[in-house]
Structures are given as C-alpha cells and as structure tokens.
Length: 432
Image 1 (cartoon, one colour):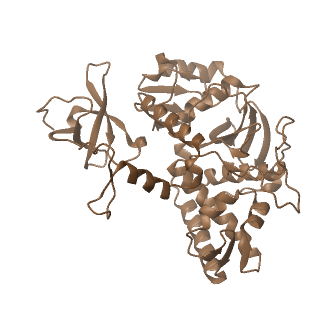
Image 2: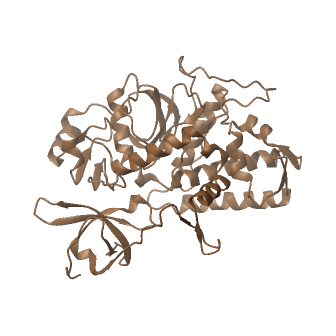
Image 3: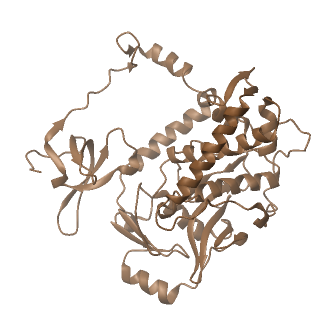
C-alpha cells in the first residue's frame, strides 16, 4: 500500500490483517527494527487487545485515514433514548440501574481505576513470540519482563525451569547441558495416564512461580502481575512423556483468601486450548474447595475466555445436580452447598437460562425437567464435538477429571475461614 501521508501515534487508518481484510485501527506506538525498518503497533477498533500487533507500513492503507469523533463532555450515547444522548446526571442513573450491585461497591471502583492504570501501562507488547519446548507461540499481551528482555521480538523459555533467554544458542545449551529439572518443583497431587498436576508452594519456589506469572501475562490481560507470589499456591498441569513433564497450563490461588476465592488466575497455553484442559483446571479448583469445605468463586473480573469457560463448567455441574433431584422447585442454597459454587455464580448462570421457568423471591427456581434433559443432551454432544475437533493432538474423548486420582490434603496454613457442615445453610465467603 502506498505511503502517502505521515503516520503519527493516535492516527486512525484501515490496516490489513492476516486474513487478508482491512480493519479500522488506531496507531498506538512505533519502533525501528534491527534492520532499520519502521513498524507500527496497532489496535483494531472494537476487537480484543490480544489481536493488537506490530505491522509494517505496507499493511497500512494510508489513503484511508479517518478521525474518531470524541464523545461530548458528560454525555453518554444510548440508542433508543430520544436522540440517543444522556446528560451526566442521566448517565449516572443509567449506570446505576444497569450495573450489578456488586460492581457499585467502592472497593470495585478502586479496582476499576487500578485496572485502567494497568491497561495504560501494558498497552504495548514488544515480545511477538516465545519459543517454549517444541512450540513457537505468538503472544497476546504485554508482560513486565526486565527491561533488557521485554523489548525483544522473540524470547526463548525453558519449558521445565521456565528460565527465559535472549538467544537460541543460549537456550539450546541450557536445554542440553545445564537444566536438570524435568518437572515442576512441587508435590504431585494428581496422576492419571499422561496427565500430572503439581502443587507448587510459591513461598518455597519463588523464582519458578515468578517466571510462570511472567509467561502467563503474555496471554492474560485482566490480571495484574505481582512479584510477591509468596501468598499463593500454584497448581501446574502437565503432559508427561519420556522427556519429562511439559507444562500445558496452571491455576493459582491464595493460601488464605478473605473472599474465599478458590482461584486467582488460570491459563491454558494457546497450543493446548480447546482440548478440555481449562475445564479440567476449573474442576480441580472446585474439588480442592470441597475437600477444604469452602463455598468459593474465582477472583473477578474474568476475561472473556474465562467467562465462557466458567459458564460452561457451572452449567454442566448445576444441571447435573438438578437432573439428580426430582423436585421441580429447588433452593439455590442447596445447589451451592452440594457443589461449592457461590450463590451469585449460580444466579448469574441460571437467571436468563431457557430451562428455568421463573425465580421465586430471587432464591427459589422452577424448571422444566424435559427442557433440562434436552439441554444436557446438547451439552454432552457439544463437548464430544469440541474434543474431536480440537485440532492436531486432540483427545479422541473429552478430558475428564477423575477425582479418585486426586491425592491432596490442604497445606497447614490454608485453614478455611468458613467451613461447611452437611447440615449448614450458611454461605462462607459470599460477596455482599
């Protein structure tokens, strides 16, 4: 594409994506490569930031420059509201009426401000890809590696100890002659076939867990990275073969969570996504919660992919419980006690679902058992199709968590703040 105008940070053009189509995008940053070529970091408007990328000038249609109009000060555009404009006072009322109560909490306001600051700081990613084991993985987001590493286009990472390196020859020497580690440095808590899970105590393995967080941040946008990993436990999921245990994903959780969060951060590395590993990790987090006797919830906010994964898990668990109980009117608290899923997550999953006839007083639900049975049949069919269509290396059948293969007792310092008894109707850790 011809370069007919200057390209400045903040400008808007149509940019050619890898699918061969032009999309409106904004220019976020520029850089000069080692060979003197100028590249531009672009954000595609109305798309997730994980699609942001560095492009050369020949992918920018410089004849298509356009201006994005700034919103009127204090005015919110809402389709269907008179001329579509709300004043500042109406905007506040609109947001109050359309925002869940939990999101109006002052603590959440602070969290949102920190998230905006974090987003501004991490808006540009410089590392385009990482070499991890036999995979070359394109990155999605910024990660705060040390300055001398974060502006490299490619990073080489040992899949066993997670040490990161600048050059291929250094990585090869490390893999062949230096690294003696062949599995995560923790206790094995799950083993079935080639699947292994290791519990890693970050207070004892600080460097490994920090490196795992840095790697994960390349593919996560909503989690702020903390170098103080000591309060966390990491559950690392691996595929094992004769060469060792290869990391495919993990989740972390606080040793003691004042909010009874059963999960802080979760990631399945891109080469292993759509194979059931995400749901496996979510299931593991709830099985650990059952052993601890805690009704919990994942730390919020969830990413768009995380929301989809959790919705799928919650639907499956809740509906299987409903099918196993003959009453057509069921209390939400009874589902929560049996599954350790927090009441607010149950309500969020079911409140607009097709199998629910109506809610009584916000706590009792009536359902159509026939619709529920038909929906569960569709869920099982969908899981089978996804497992068989997961691409190269996909399992012939869905990856299923086998609770009989779990060998775990809570660490001494992870005593639950609120325990459940078989007859308890109290909900520990529920957000108010």
